[in-house]
Each structure stands twice: as structure tokens, then as C-alpha cells.
Amino acid sequence: MDEIVISGGRKLSGEIAVSGSKNAVLPLMVAGLLTDEKLTLRGTPRLADTRTLANVLRELGAEVEEFGQGPGEGVNVQAADLASTRASYEWVSKMRASFWVLGPILARAHEAQVSLPGGCAIGTRPVDLYLNGLAAMGADINVEGGYVNATAQGGLKGARVDFPFVSVGATHVLMMAASLAKGETVITNAATEPEVVDVGHCLQAMGARIDGLGTRSLTIQGVERLSGADHTVTRDRIEAGAFALAVAATAGDVTLTGIDEAALGALAPAMRLAGVALRDAPDGLQVKGPSGRPQATPITTEPYPGFATDLQAPFMGLMCCADGVTRIRETIFENRFMHVQELARLGADISLEGDTAIVTGVEKLYGAPVMATDLRASVTLVIAGLMAEGETRISRVYHLDRGYERIEEKLSAVGAQIWRQSA
Ligand code: EPZ
Image (cartoon, rainbow, N blue to C red; front, side, top):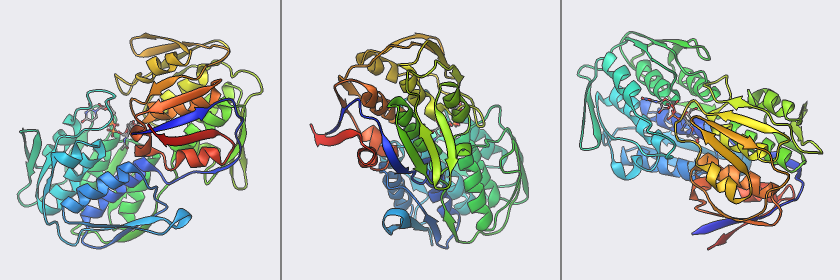
């Protein structure tokens, strides 16, 4: 198995191109199942997760083909026929977003059997919102042998779906299902994450009638059929955030091309409070780390537009060496602090009190062998390794490969000493 090795203490400087968003491209590929025509997605990242999802879609009879190189990269999805309505445990267990095929298959074929999902072990992650929403739209659902079996004789019907709290995935799935249902669906407490808006725009280009994108209430008039489309995927604000934090952590000066400050959302004001300079430049966002230690800056994760849970771990990485004590509260997932014990191996001083991590900034971190435990924890260890004195070896890097495209190449190009080797 591969390891990532980092020799810390180098300032990053130069330019990093931000890739297409993982959490947008996954539901966009799923949306390809809603039509028999070709959906072309441009600016897509090449990741282990997109390869896994491609296999799920192929199992259902779709053709999935990557094309192009570098900035011209993309993927075509065409599900001329749904050869199968069953998404098996073998693939769905590898990644939670594969479960999202449930919505399009059910909407298009009026029946679906989809394995319960896997994904990062960051909490229990139930699927009740999906199932209750689809049931409100007339689906008959039972869960047996680890599979969700759903049927909708005569097709799904428009309905009112009141989510008790915000779920990104349930919003994607219900928005897709409602686009091909009969009549009007109103979704309240919808997610407003930029990735949901991106998927909504692509669905609109496919002929869906969706109002209210980016607000907590979506109104969708179902249509008989959707067409293909040609859509460019939004840039990855979570990848961009991790790079911005890596730059800050090394007191570097890097321009992140393809995004602006607004794309960082609530991370931007938190970074400014920590003493990081951010400036929108013609080619992207210039990030300049503080010359001394960053200021301790408390955060609480919340649904968008709040501080993204996917940036909680990387932000904690920066705060390990902050001047002062930082309280970091995680309100979305109940088990998303697995990076804490690995950061401690590098010399961080962090204690946990329920949903809050209390980080007492230390002067320095020191390299050590550490283990990636989930996707966002793994990039946190990269950030910490870049800050640390000496060598950090990160094992289980398959977590990193799920969501960060060529990360060691991108960071080497701006001066980091980071490489991959077979353990
Ligand atoms: C998406 O996951 C993202 N995944 C996650 O990113 C992200 O952390 C999360 O949204 C929150 O922003 C993708 O986009 C592929 P949720 P999702 O449904 O949709 C609970 C990463 O690292 N819930 O918004 O699965 C759930 O357990 C990943 O890239 C239910 O209780 O997240 C959680 O506590 C990790 N019942 C909360 O809602 C349900 O039926 C929010 O989860 C559905 C969700």
C-alpha cells in the first residue's frame, strides 16, 4: 500500500489550480441516469470516488467514458437503457454517494433495489430522510437483507417533503426524483450547498423545472422526460479550502486559480481572523499566511452557508499551532474527530468535550508516522505534516485518493517536499 511522505517546514509559493468539485461531480454523474441521452460533464476531477461511481452506473447499464486531459477533462454518461435497476452492495458499500442512484432509477424505471450505503466512518449516517421523502412521493419501500427495495407503480407523484433538518444527499435525490415525477413537489429545509445549486443548474439544462435553488424551499414541476446536456462542474471549494489552509500553515504565498474568496464561504472570515491575508486577484485567490503563529479562531460547523463540516478537520490542522486556545464544534456528524489522535502523534494538544475539540496551540509539530482515517482527516495530516519539523509518513492514503486529485504533484509544484512511495 502507498504512503505519503512529507518533509515539513517549507513555505509554499506559486500557483495551484483548483479541480472540479468531487461533491458536485458525483451527484451530476448520478443525474445522468435520468435521461436516455448523453450528459457531458466538463472540468471533472479524476478520483477514486468517480471511478467507483462509474462502476455503479455501468452496473445499471450506463456507458461512462472519461475524455480529455488536464483542464479539458470530462466525463460522458449515457444511460440509453436502464439494463438493471439493482445497485449492488459490492459498489454501493464503498461510497455513500452511490446510494443516490435510488432517486433517478426509481423515477425512471418505477422500481429500484439499492444496497444500503458505506462511505467514511464519520457517524451513523442513516437514510431515513431519503426513504420518507420518496414514500411521500408514493413509493412503496421496504428494507431487507441490506437492500432498499422501492417501487412506484405508475410513477412517482409530486408531494410536499418537509425535511426535519438539512441533508445534502437527500436534497439531491429528492430534487432528481421530483424532476421526473407527476405534478409539483415542494421540498422544505432543502440544502443550499453550492454543489446542490450546481446539480440544480445541470438539471435545469436537462429540462427540469426547479425554482428556489440556493434557498431552503425548492418547488419542482415534474416533466415527462429529461434530455442530455453539456455542463461544466463547479470548482471544488473543499479542495480549495484545504490548499488555502496548507498555504496559511506554512506562512506561504500561493494563488489558487479558478476560484475567488466567495467560494471559500465561511472559511474566508475565519482565516482572516486567524491572520491570513486573502485577496481576489485576476487569476484566482491569493492566500498569504501570517508571518508568526495564526490567531486561535473558534468555529462551529453548520449546513451551508455555515462553516463546512468537510473543512473542520483541515482547519483544526492550522489551529494546532495557533496562538491561544481554539474551540472547534462539530454539529453535523457525531464521529468526525478521528484526526485528533493522529494530530496528537505529531505533538498537537487537543482534548475532546462532547461535540467540541479544544485545541491548545503549540509552538511546533514534529513529524511522525500517522494513519489516515477518513477523507478529510487525511488531508489534515498532510497540512500538519507540511507544518511539522522532520518527516511525516501517512499510511492508508487510499482515503486521500478518494477526494484529492494528484495532491502530492500539486503541492510539490509549489515547493512542498512531499512524495508517494510504496510501503
Ligand atoms: C454530503 O454528505 C457530502 N458528501 C459530505 O462530504 C458532507 O460532509 C455532507 O454532505 C455535509 O455537508 C457528498 O456530497 C458526496 P448529509 P451527505 O445528508 O449528503 C444526517 C466528504 O468528505 N442524515 O447532509 O451524506 C447525517 O447522518 C463527504 O466529501 C440523517 O440522519 O450528508 C448527518 O448527520 C463526507 N438521515 C446529517 O444528516 C438521512 O436520511 C447531514 O448529512 C440523511 C442524513
